[in-house]
Image (tube, rainbow, N blue to C red; front, top):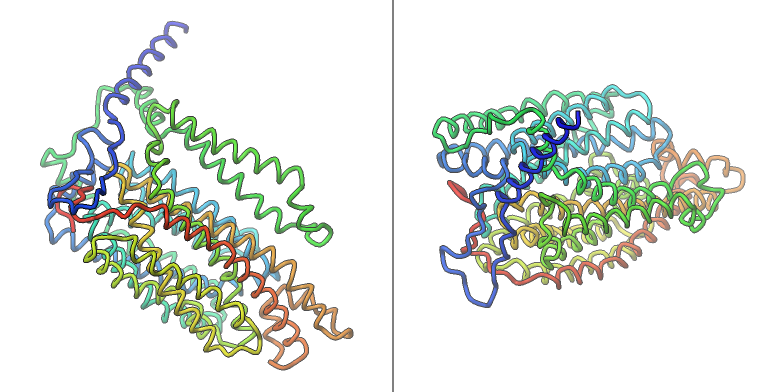
Length: 597
């Protein structure tokens, strides 16, 4: 037995040494010394020995034709269209699902959980698609998204629905993430912002279709039917892209471009190889760290003792403090592990120290935190305060999505022409702050809905510009090998911001709305406070102007103002994030190889 273990130990050491030799040191970031790079400037494409997923996509790009590439992008566009329609429809129906279970306030807690898990899951997905390949990772995300939709269509209790939402959002965010990595794999850096803008255009179309579809389903008792329809559509529309990638892979294998996997490894050697490549210690430390830091946000702002203890007491609870401390220690441990202990780094240490990537992470975190401080209950606010229909609520609610997607195309063209991404961000940031500040006085029941819409438009133009710029900033200083993980880090920043913002929103909502509904109700009707707080459908049963409706309207207004004040207070961090960026010139920086855009 000892001899067997000794032999396996030596085999493992040989594999580790081979991996160390074949994984080169980090490629330094492109210099920006004030001069325009020459057309064949810094080559940051992958070196000869790199991860399987990156090598494979470069091999595919070397054998496919321009026509095949355009076909692939057309299929990506169709997938984005169906995914956007799916998200617009189901998100419009979600408040009514929660209300059916008499737990409308659960929206914030569910959003925190989906943001935490959806954001952290991008890190293992990044490693998965680098080790196994882009098609395999995308297929796995399609399966999860479909499973979540099936569970939502079949659920009959709130616990199942929350679990289905978590599975669905991991799959949905994963699909979106892998498709963006695919676009990054197949575009030059200077053209990438424009391609991202084109890919977001389907959201403009579906913003008008989704809410109308949700209204149609709700009025015909088809609340769960919509989930079932998209459970069928999702695998159908994604299959052609997977078939295209797999067929191109066979072509590359026939041409000898893709190196065959070693056949002389034993099963144990293969397991050791993939375990080392995946870096499970680093993965465990970083995922556990962020989950343990963010999960207390949900526990401290929800639970059965919500009314018996103050918010400060809940934050000072021993279990909350313990989780936060363990989370911070896990993140610190991850940094030490990546710096000195990992045989194959999960995230190259040079990327963790890069100010442009860190600034993009900080901007994403601050922007989404500010946005989700008030956005989760905005659709409910519109219906209760302004008496809008589901369809019209969806249109107003999605002004931000429409505007940010429309503006992303000219912003992409602008970035390509001026060869920079920092200047547009510095222009858009003051507008984003101004739009948030103007929302505060207009969150009053006496305000006109036109003022609310105007603020949404201003924030959409600024927000769409900032999102495109932060994505390019996150990728600009790395090489092809780090594209997936860099994109995941920026995405993690947005999900952390979403989770924190949703937790703040939930805390303000649960501590404000029920108290003020009861305060504004006449004494003989105070018994209705719990019903009005727990179900938006119950609120809408009362006509505008009635005592019950007006009490709820005033309570919603107080809560939204408080949410927006907090949302404005976090935006200075966004200014600091953009200030950290290097003003890199994009043209001539080569990150990818083969037939690309």
